Length: 107
Picture 1 (cartoon, rainbow, N blue to C red):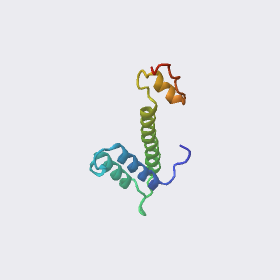
Picture 2 (picture 1 turned 90 degrees about the horizontal axis):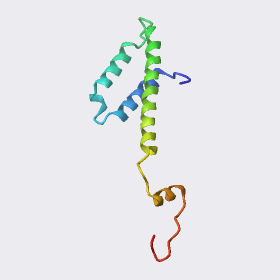
Picture 3 (picture 1 turned 45 degrees about the vertical axis):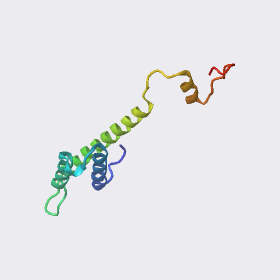
């Protein structure tokens, strides 16, 4: 995580990851309501300068990084995780080889 970017980008990224993680409409989830309420409570207004906004932004960006990493890890695990014992024909096909044909049509 090199740079934080803008709080709006972080907010949108969190909502995007929430959309990926949730099977149902994400606006009905408690996580969505919490994220929106927290970002609204820590925004900077003309009447006050909120020091906690920097802390919130850093925590939100860290959480966003965690959510993305978990999603990408799950996708990689699903794609490359072993599927048990494979037949020699399957293994040969995976690496681009064909097994030799046996005489008499056996194989």
